[in-house]
Image (cartoon, rainbow, N blue to C red):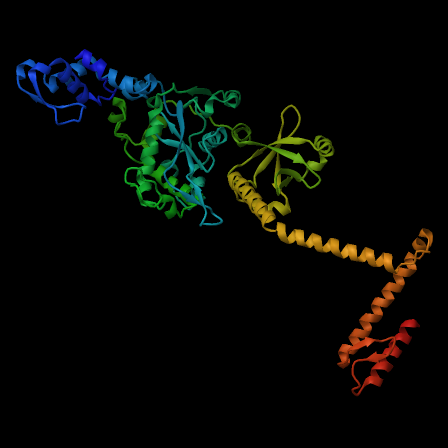
Length: 535
């Protein structure tokens, strides 16, 4: 059998075992088997066993091959070692060993949700699938913060999800016309430990979290999603509640080849998807966690394994490790930074996006920056570009509020992503317009050059070459007045002729087109008008 496995190799997944068995029978047990030479055409022949006890059966052959390729060996050969450990190793420690209470450890992760979105300005434009960040408390399993946007997973989006933990959830839901009780979604604030998945939290800017909040930033080991399975499971829970019922949902199991893309049925913009995500989070926070390993005292007090109930129970009976900070401190370390360039108009962030503060011109450091055209650091609310703060100079670096200028008020209420998308779309439209109008613009330029050439030729033909340059320049003012008088005279003659229903061609020669009645009256009126003008 080993000779057969070497001569006719078997694939790592067991494919080719039949061919290897046929090779063994043909080359090693030929005297015990009756072959049909007409079948196979020179390849592996059909086998007809004559003496069964002398030839190993295929079941025996397969069994012996399986003994030499154990269960842990087969997938290990088929997959790399890291992927094998990810799939088959057990995570036996659990998630309730380290947390001492609510706010001790938060888990954060991101995923691209399975729903296509459309543009808020133009519903016919599909903008893709948004990215959802979720922050979950390890003790109570409650979703304490989230962020959804069109940008891919990044540091700024992760910090906005952490900032969302500190927001009053009643006021947040009110922005989406959702009314809740405060106990249905408590405010999470800032935890002691934050665990991510070796992506955004491995950036050097993560040191700001340590300096600003004394926060322990942790990263899960590679290929170990179970280390933060608390947040991984929430993604499936959230999408299972709303996914199959939404237009534009991507059902990977039900989609078949040849069917239309789910993106063609999309009709929800980012605001609508955020509203639906909020409903799903509220539902998840009030649902029973069936695999929760609670303590006996939790059950003894009659507390169900519901995230909100567990949070409130721990808040009353156990310690609470989360910390509260002022809004200015949270904005400084969690809001994304931007560079504002000092221009003659105002502080410029992007094309058409300008800011200015009420008392900035009175600050000496701002006046120096304005003269030098320097760039200043600022903090911006990515969900509303109308809210921004300039980081002032000095030891403290106070936050100075700035507002959109009057010309930039049109961007108020838009997100940073929407402003960037509008700028990119405008650039594409302008580039297409430049190409479309290349022909007409070239013809207009050629026409202007032709008129200029004809005027130059006429000037050379009719001008007096004996005049000096000084004499020509000396009479500019008088020539201008004569030209104005001539233009006024022509305008008056045309108005009188139109008023009387007559068309005058050559007034100086007193010649007209027709000899109808009223010619003498026209001439008299023209002479009187010219006499008054000369006086």
